[in-house]
Structure formats: structure tokens, C-alpha cells
Amino acid sequence: MDILCEEEFRALGWEVRVTTEDGSYGEKGLVTQALLAELERRMPGRKLFACGPNPMLKAVGQLAAEFKLPAELSLDEHMGCGLGVCLTCVIPVKTGTGWEYQRTCTEGPVFDSRQIAWEAEA
Ligand code: FES
Figure 1 (spheres, rainbow, N blue to C red):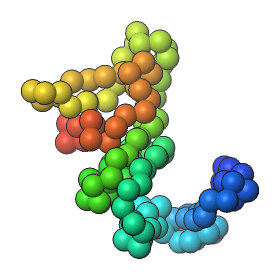
Figure 2 (figure 1 turned 180 degrees about the vertical axis):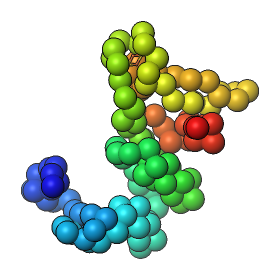
Figure 3 (figure 1 turned 120 degrees about the vertical axis):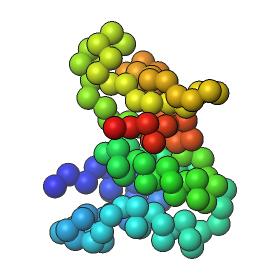
Figure 4 (figure 1 turned 90 degrees about the vertical axis):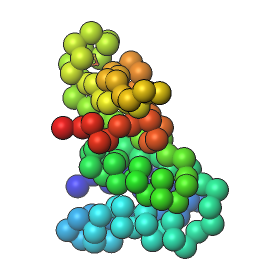
């Protein structure tokens, strides 16, 4: 199991909560459960940053919307070329009239959670 940067974040003085789905390290459960508890006990005026699997990012985006917080999500789509040519990395992004595909390799990979058209995902 690789928990990245835990000690580095602690060394910066940040409170760090680690979760694992099976409880083998840190708290047992989904990270979004820990996030919900944090959002419920803390004052507003924060911003969320997340990377990871899309279902988790979608849940983080929903919590951000629920708590009226901005969130930046880094999408880990499969990338073929990394140059904007192959279109294997596209995600649906909202536009003024609906949504369009954008490339995570060139337009992202970080998107404002409110931009992502999760409902258009297959
Ligand atoms: S990885 Fe090829 S277009 Fe994004």
C-alpha cells in the first residue's frame, strides 16, 4: 500500500486523515465519508482539491456542490498520446448550451468540479 506524502503533509502542520476501504490503514471507509464529516464540522470558506478514480471525484464534486465550496478535480483518464491528438482522454464538459468533450491531456487534467458533465458519462 502506498500512502503518498502523509508525513510530508504532517510536517507542514496539516491535519492528515488517511482512509482505506478495508481499514488496513487509517480509518476504514471511503474517503468521501471522512470528507463529509470534515465538511460538517468545519467552517465554510475552503476549497477542495482531489485526484483519484472518477466515481470518487464525482462524489467529491457532489459534496462540494452541497456545501457550496469550489473544488478542483484532477481527472486520471487513460492517455494515449498526451498531446491532444488521439482523443482517448476526453471527458464531457459543460458549455452554455449543453456539453462537449474536452481533452484531459491538453484542456486539463484539472477541472473545476462544476464544469464536468457527469450526467453525460457513459
Ligand atoms: S491523450 Fe491523446 S488526446 Fe489526450
